Length: 97
Image 1: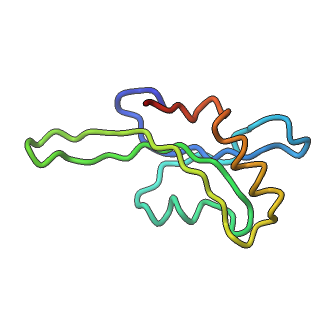
Image 2: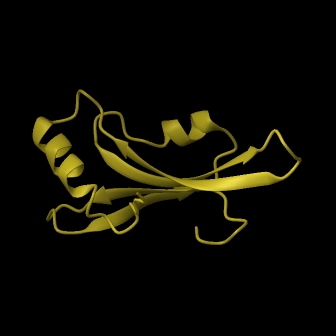
């Protein structure tokens, strides 16, 4: 996902022992709807995906890497709390100030 021409997504989950963040799924979605459908209905997840867009000023296609935290409201509250509290510590969730 660090390549300049990278496309696709990675979906991560916390393992059963709740001590590691592991890759749950990978893919190259042709559309945003396919990316959203890759998430389980009632389980939290993290995701990293590359979104491509074109700038209005020129014809260059640009890409940005996006971190997402998926917290369905009908998932267990404890799971929501674990995912929310560990999101900042996730190695792929780089933040810039």
